Length: 109
Length: 143
Image (cartoon, rainbow over all chains, first blue to last red; front, top):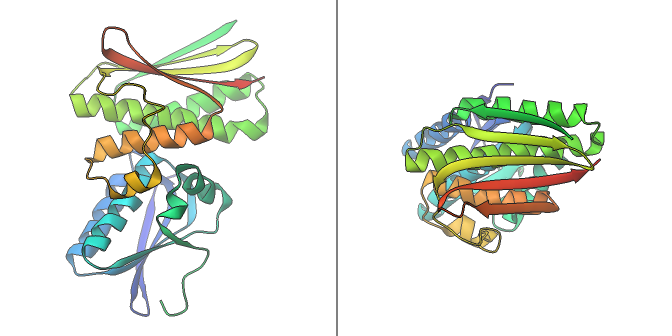
C-alpha cells in the first residue's frame, strides 16, 4: 500500500494525517511534507498515524527528526496513535518516553 | 534443511519486496501466524539497515538474504559496507540518545533499526565480517 498524506488544521495545530506504509521508500515524501510545513512557519504539529498499516525505522526516524526540529523552534509535536501495532514499535524503541503520543487529538488542538 | 536465497540492489524500493519474500517464506515454513508480522517487520528492519549502510558508504553490491528452514526458521541479512561500529547490540542507542542525537539520516535509520530489532527479536545476532567489510544480521524463530 502506498503512503497517503493529508494536511488539515485543528484549532491552532496543523495535523498531518498519514495512511498506508511508511518505509524506506515512502518516508522521503513524509519527511519532505513535514519540512515544508516547518518552512511555512508551522510550530504546533500533530501527526496522526492511526491509518498507518506499517511503519519501519525510517518512519520512526522521520518522527524523531520532526520532534528535534520543532524542539529547536520551541514548537511542539504530538503523535496521534491508538493502533496497537504502532504503539508496540514506539514502546520497543523507547520512543514512547520521548515523543508526546496521544490516543486522540487534544480538543484544544 | 530447506534454504531460500534472495539478493537485491540496495535501493529503498526493493526493501518492500524483501519484506514480502521473508513473510512468504516464513508462511511456507509453517511459522506460527502470530509470528509472521514480527518476521516481516524484523526482516524489513534488517534490510533497511543494510540499504542504509550501503548507501552511506556508496556500496552498490547486492544485499543478500538467506532463509533456512530446519528445527528453527533462520533469516540472515548480509550487507557489504565497511564495519564502522563494533559490539553493535551493546551499542544500540537508547531512546533519549535517538531523540537528541545529531546523526545523519542513514546513521539514524541504522541506529533505530538496531534498537527496534533488539526489542523485536529474542534470538538476534549482529556479526561483523572478520575482514572489516560487511555485517550479518541473524535472526531465528521456533517452528
